[in-house]
Each structure stands twice: as structure tokens, then as C-alpha cells.
Amino acid sequence: MTKFSWKKNAQRERTISLEIPNRPRTLKYRFFEILPAFISYGVVVTMVLLSFFNPLLASIFLMVVIIALLVRAVGIAFHTITGFNVIKRASKVNWQKRFLELGNAAESFEAYQKSMSKRQFDIIKHVNNLRLISEAEQGHFPLPNDIWHWVIVATYDESIDTLRPTLQAIADSSFDKSRMVIAIAYEERGGEATEKTVHILEKEFKGVFAHFFLVKHPDGLPDEIVGKGANITYAGHWLYDKAAETNLPTKHAIVTTIDADNNVHPSYFSAVAYEYLIRDERKHLSYQPVSMFMNNIWDAPAMMRVVAVGNSFWNVISTMRPHVLRNFASHSQPLAALVEMDFWSKRTIVEDGHQYWRSYFHFNGNYGVIPIRVPIYQDAVLSDTWWNTMKAQFVQVRRWDYGASDVAYVAGHLFTRKRNVPFFDCFAKLVRLIEGHTSLAYSALMVTFGGWLPLIINPDSRRSVIAHQLPTTISFIQTIAMVGIFITILTSLRMLPPRPKSYSRFRSFMMVFQWLLMPVVTILYSSVAAFYSQTRLALGLYMEKFDVTKKVVKNAGQGKNAKI
Image (tube, rainbow, N blue to C red; front, side, top):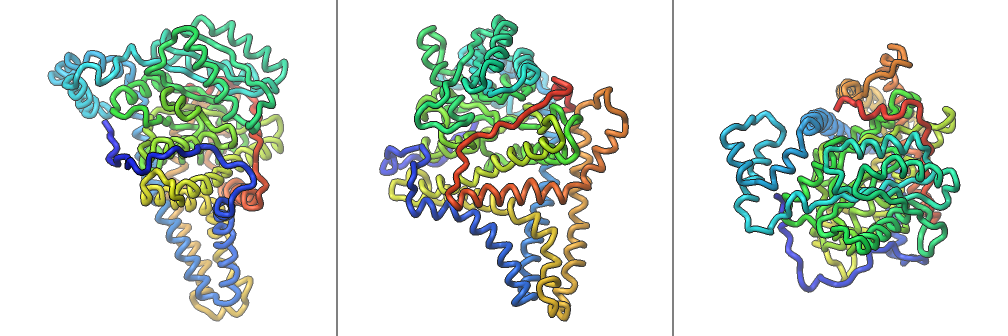
């Protein structure tokens, strides 16, 4: 049961704005909007200039960068293996059973004392939670029947073949459906096709849950950009008002936002309810599942499979590092917190990651993200043609990379007399945020081309032993890093859902050989996409429209059979 050690300072309790500032932005804000691009370009430019004027320093500079990346690669390999095993074990737990046991904690604790298999995932923690709840004063913890799940499914123009498996996965979840409220938040700009789709789904699923609502987000509302944040915020307000009309319990309601292509693990809602119930400061927490892009992984082109698996790995790794975990894509947060914060931001295309910072500053730094170590399966990018798929993948990644816009937002709240969070804690978070986005831009370029720059730009560098040996040294380090690649390949094969019968065994071999495309993928969908987003941010060409990733379904529902 986590409690935050930092106590609020009464002098810091001031009213702050959680909104992204309007234009024109202050010089300080613009400085921090430019900073990520300045650092990313600066690393590359520094390498070029040093290669021309001082190849020795260029070699040393590159080696420092490469060694830092190698150390990170070792950590990634370790967290990938341990994370996958943890998620696999956690996914086998009967979280609904554990959740219900919290309602009868004393008897359940006694039963475990007599018979307990220590091989079960986190069973010691569970038994300790039962003990603490049984010893607590009555009313300190809510009861299982007090907890409700509100689920907002955001959609723009996705097909019924995309949305139906999403709703069916929710219906198949282990949590009591009589305490679940479902809202399809759809866009008016989706047109008649979307209107028809959601009404068909309403007929199919309305009797499954306590309530099933359709919430149409009007187009062109003031102070909104075209994006998911505005859509789900409108739906959140609509549901909250509807709850008041229908006397729907709100005190212990947990709101989960999921995308149209998300297939939740059957235990997800039970696991969230369990974690919510055992926490003392539950309103100051959000709950983050492991997003895995495996729904249609067999159908996607090879380059998209590499991107999808790589993103899945990153989410697996993140769940093993709770101190740096941020909100991403689908996540859950208490209704009480969302009402206080006016739900999500309506003025950014990265409302998921930005929600972490809004919550952090709203709660004066007393906020955290709890990893829910069961997956939510999402689609790999797949459009109607290979070229459109390539473009759609770039659009998706550049939108994620636009999270660099949060650098200025965080810095604006940190470097001010109105600061309401601990300086060093926030400063460390800001440094991690900057480093994460900038390294995303320059790393692939430095690894791929950096070793040859001194020799190409300055022929005289061939006289330098260090510079001349640099490509060989880099190649040796990359050979060591290949261990991590093999771990990645083996783990990715374990994660795959069963191969559809429509594909031959040759497709399975391609799941291995696709990793030969990794250098191209990392340059195009890591470096180029990151530079694109950071450059636009630096120039003030703000990305203020959520470009929806088009989804084509070939084998609907495939992800629910994934191996985890």
C-alpha cells in the first residue's frame, strides 16, 4: 500500500492553471519549446564539426554516446526478459477472486495462513493486504461492491469490425458487468457511417452492462483542437451529468479510456479495482496497463511489425520501472480526480502522456502511476495499401513524438515562483523527459553513421589511429549489442498470437528475418519522426489536429489469443 512521503507545503498551495497557454507564448515558454530540437540537432552538428576540426575529439564524443547507449541496451534486455515473465505470471492470476477476497479480508487472511502457495504471483503482498485491511478501522477502505468501472471507448470513423471485438473483450472481462458503465464517445465529424455503426453496437451490447450510452461529440466547440482529448472530455462531462440524473454511484467510480482497437485482458478491470481498493491515496493515482500491439501482428507488413513489437517491448520495460512510468494510450483514473481536473486536456494531441503532468501538478507532486501488469492488446498499423501503411505509421509515431511539447509545459510549472511541486523531484523528471525525446532523435543516426563521419568529412583523420579504428570499434560494440537483438527476437516470438491458418510457415520465418530491417526502421520511425515533431515545435508550427491512424481489419479478434 503505497503512501507518498512528500507532504504538501502550505505556502505552495496556490491555484495553478493546468491548461496549455494560449498564443502568443512567453519567451521562456518558447525557449523550452525550442530546447529539444536544439539539443537533438546540436548533438549531430557537434559530431559533424568535431569530425572536421578535431577528429580525435569527435571519436571520443561518439564513443561516449555509444557506450551510454550500450549500457541502456543492457538494461533494456534485462527488463524485457523480466518484464515479459512478470506479465505472463500476472496474467494467470484470478484477479477477480483476489479482489472479492478483500471484501472478506479477515476470513481470507486466515484461510491463506493455513494454505498458501508461494509460487503464485505477488501472493505474499496479497496476504499482507488482507491483513492490513482486516486490521483497519471500518470504512477506511471501500468494499468491492462500492467500486464501479466507467469505460469510455473513443472512436472517430473506425469500422464495426474494429469496434465490435473491443466491446466484446470488455463484455468477456471477469469484473461484474452490473457495475460497469460503457460509453462510446464518437465524433459528429465521423458522419453517417459512424452514426450507423455505433447504433448497431448499441443494440448488440446494451443489455450486457449496467448502462450503455452513445455520446456524440459535436464538431467545432470553442477552445478545442481536433483530437481525442476533446472527445473523451466531452464524454466524461456527459457521463458525470447523467450519473446525477440517474443516481449512479460516483464516489468510487474508476474511469478507463480505451481506443477503438483495444482488446482488454479479461482480468484488467478486476486488477485495476484491486489496486484501487488497497491504496490509501487512491485519488492521487492512475493505473496503467501494458499496451501491446499484437491484435493484427500477422497481417501487418514487416516494417510495421518491427515498430509494433518494439513499442510493445518499450511498454513491457516501462512497467518494470514504476518510478518513470507515465500514462500512455489506455489508462484508468478515479472519477473524483478527473472531475477536479476537468478531465483531460482539450488542447493537445498527446492527451495521454500529458495527463500525467496535469495530474502531477494538480496534486502538488503527490501523484503516481501504478503499473497494471496485464496487457491491453492494440492494432499494429495496417492500411489498405503498403504505401498508405508506411505513411500511417509515420503519422502515428510523429504524433507520439510530439510529446516533446510537454517539456515546455513542465518547465513552465517548474521555473516559477508559483511552483507547487518539489523542485528537485520535478527537475529530475524534466531531465528524463528531455533526454528521452532527444535521444530518440539522434541515437539511430549516431550509431549508423557516426563512426564514418571523421573519415568522410576530414581525410586527414586517417592519420589518427583512434579515428581510423573508430568504425571497427563501433562495429565491435554493435556485435556485443547483438545479444540484446537476439533476446528481442526470442521474446517477440514468445509474445506472438497463434499464426492464422491463412498464412504458411514461411510467415513464421519472416517474423525472425524482419529484424534485418531494424536499422531502416529506427532511422525512419525514430530519428526522422522525432526530428520532424521537434522541428515543428521549435518553429512554432504546432500540431493541433489529431491525425487518426486508419485501421484495416483482416482477422478480427486475433489479439485475444495472444500468448500472454
